[in-house]
Length: 237
Ligand code: PXP
Image (cartoon, rainbow, N blue to C red; front, top):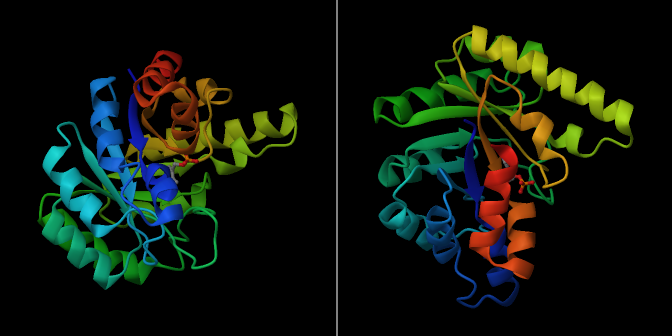
């Protein structure tokens, strides 16, 4: 049964629009868990545009399922992760002017940095995941690093302009999921998934977990957090 990790970043985005104290991503996380979410995901960006350090400290205290910290592979972030001890760290590329994470890690180019970032996290018992594009070469390069999971970037699938492009992107994700599982990685997927496009990804047998944020928070504004999470769970299972 595929698991759902709810990314609460965009609850914080609404809060930061006013630099006030509501809505609170910590409350959203608790409500997501009450609705059946298997985990909570939060991305601490270098520019702190949404999630703040305070949010992570509180999330670490209240999350009872599984806390996945998304972060760049930088020394400052590794230090934060080692203090916080999330259950999982997902390493993502980070560009200062991007609206959202625009693609997977270039594992080949960042090999040295990644090979220095992963061991201290794993030594602390933190499970490490690498966010990668559906590209077999990236997965093969990742195999040489001692990461536990790969999260396959579903952004191009989500942005496909027509059904044939969508199918081509889906096939790439299916192929890469199979290769990743054969290489011994746990496999998750996410980015850009919606209530409309999630099912074919949830049906990929190697995919253990989906990490979904924007569409759930968007529905939550209209229908409430618990209902939004419950509806996503019933779609993916
Ligand atoms: N997975 C990763 C690695 C991400 O960076 C994000 C966005 O923060 C997500 C999943 C969730 O993407 P979305 O908000 O589009 O569901």
